[in-house]
Image (cartoon, rainbow, N blue to C red):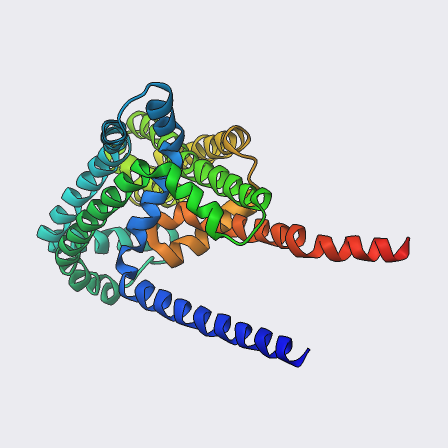
Length: 350
């Protein structure tokens, strides 16, 4: 009995020691490669979206794996990255123009603040605050260049990882079932939840933002907004943010109208923004949630807030996924470990 106990103690110590080594090495690699986390998360997102098409092309249509992978990568670039690139280029050109004409813009902001103070009795900012914007604007171009280089690097790594994930799709999934120490049914539960949440976030959030941007663009053209396509891009981007959303676009527009003495246009902008653009958000979000996956709105809101804080822009997708995954893991824990205890208690009672 003592020899058996001694052997068990040795095995437990060896396992604990081995787990410590694995976790330490994993944390070290995670720390050193943390720059590429957005790229890996992005490749995982695209893999989840492309996986059924990859299996259809290779297993149903009998395409070669490299051919199918390159086709899906090319389509993802045209459908996903190209529109974002156009929006980013539009905003970047305006930001560069703002830097080159920063003094005129600061003078315009001071005049706008003075007009608001005269008309409404309060100032949105004093002259000292507005003057501090100048140095901030001049720092933007180096940051844009740095962000552009980083983004290109991340996109390159993203597609590099994605290619091999698509090529070795079946092998990768088999290894996941082999290495995760859970019942296959619980692994299926986790996989289905991740798939549903990623699809709902990766498709739903950008699609709703695009719809809001198009609806906003129609209003901007009818109301007479200057640079309507710039505000269309701003609306699309801000619409993906939680809580405030597209109001970050149409409320400043209304303020600009009011400050310029165009009260009717400002009032119409507010009514159109809250009444039409806001209604589009609520209506299509409800419809897409039902279509893509019945995800609770609170999971989306709090998940996006947490995700952006942790991962940046890609957190729009992975924030809700992590929050939903946390809830599913509680269910998995109950299925995996607590169910046996409940069954034994019922057996003892009987």
